[in-house]
Image 1 (cartoon, rainbow, N blue to C red):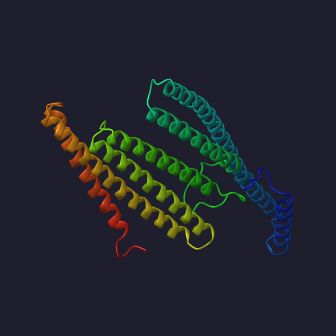
Image 2 (image 1 turned 180 degrees about the vertical axis):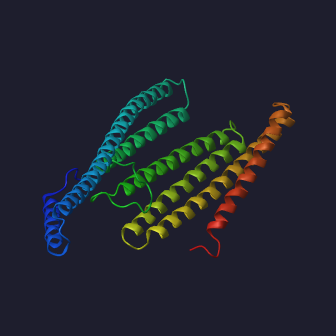
Length: 308
């Protein structure tokens, strides 16, 4: 919106017409007190004009404040982009060093995979920040990631960042599959236990669940932009997706805690770890069970018969 700090010529012209018309009317019908009436009309005109100028001044001050806030946001995202670029260079160097150690026989392949995955995460973070910075520069406001957020000009920033999230989730799946394959090779060679292999499988399963959520959120955004869903319908569907994902995540965490408990129990019986570690594993299972119940309650609320 554009705010004016001075009254327009149209406003002043109309004000003058009103004053002159009122003066003629008073001189024609009122009692003979022309000087006092004219002074009163002049005072009223001054008040009206002052009110107009006051409103314009308030709007001008608001616009100045908004401009300052927009400039501050743009500067913040510029700093964040600079820090992300620095982290990306560091992550790339770490990945190269991990490869060199692996090729020299000083480390395992899992270290290389972890370093490469971290570099990919930082790279995706840079891309997301660039999208956010572009939106801030265009609107002067905080980036909006709601499924029902409007387009900015002809650009769909929400879809852009959902696509970044989907690419990130896909990379997580690939990394988890690679780590599971390594765990299976080591298990077949007798180097790792059944519990460790199951843990790798659970990590892969969790990554796949996150990827499915990212794809479904992209579908929700497309349905809203195409006019197939209202804003409230899109936001409620997104809440439902999040609740379903949380139940799935807590279920995976519970299964992982039970696998860890099984391993801790066998190690405690063998005298490898103290009983205190076994009690901690039992506590983690109890906490995971409670977290799953809470997540299921949340999903049940969103899925109630009175919810649409």
